Length: 474
Ligand code: BG6
Image (cartoon, rainbow, N blue to C red; front, side):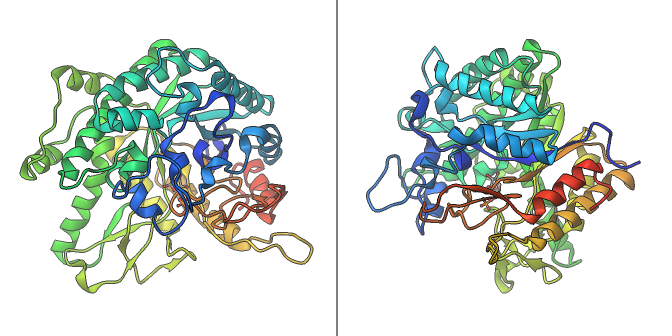
């Protein structure tokens, strides 16, 4: 009973939020480098305000991140001490192809990740690698327009071939695109897209999504060809929608909102555009350039497992005008009156994780992998300098408990769990450091001050025990 014996416990990060070293080892500039903190961040990540180079008067937190580029050995040692079985990280594309469209990769970038993967294996940690996590070389954005351009598939394919060949035997678990549905909500972050005045944004986003979906199928194909042991997953910013009431109009709205997200996974996992999506695109006058070869590729190369992030459930209603809204990883939602929320307004719903897992497993019948979950909170060291983060422990214990129910009581096949931001890192949504998720505290503030020194929070030992007992002792 309980979790599988080989359950992959661990933590997750993304290159742009922790590596820093943005000019080191021949790395090229990327979209994530030029996203500052502050009030314009939202407009930039959604592609409404164009920022393609550094502008004066802004602070760009990804430049240094938490300096993991230099400190990965000691950070991985701490993950090893917690007993991690896996560590989810992402590749900074512009370390491997600084411009993105070169024919030959950058050896220093390849060596960096090789060293990092070898370091993981020293501790028996299996790397789980996201090929792109909100990451796109800036040159590809300026010259080609990011994922709106079909050429991107060629560059991504080249990246994937290099990665799969170079890391054969070192990496087995791959995710093609982080939160692929984020392209609809934050297209600059998700796909290097900003909009021109007056263009049909939905048309651009869905065509770009099609390019990513084809690229994802191609990556899956190549991964399996290079090494049949490779396991490739899609990645969804998940969370089921609850209808606000039993009014059928609310229920229908919830179903449609869910489909807006399932759309991507339906293609990646079932291998074809679902009927409801084709009808909707047609109704909305969105025309997709899609060849027969694309369709064959999508059909033949579906993913091996379904990975997803879960932070909070969402609420749908046919008439939002009268209801309060709340935040949630770039998916603003109607406020659920039954739930508490974090300091950033993200609602807290452990049972929602079990519901979401059941929805995904019922729909796809493939193993699931929870690759992000956690609580972003302010941590204040006490007089002894310790961080007693019981609130984080409570959040994680409740969610892991719900996930255990989904496995034990509902029979969901779950490969693993990597909590988000296992070491404090830069927030993707706000660019802040003070929104912390980690078991490991990093001394750095929102303005980039601090020693970058790492220290263990109370949750560090707690998670170590959770892993040691395979999730029995929460
Ligand atoms: C997910 C992203 O949407 O949410 C992560 O994949 C991100 O990159 C995480 O960090 C938490 O969001 P935030 O805004 O609190 O960093």
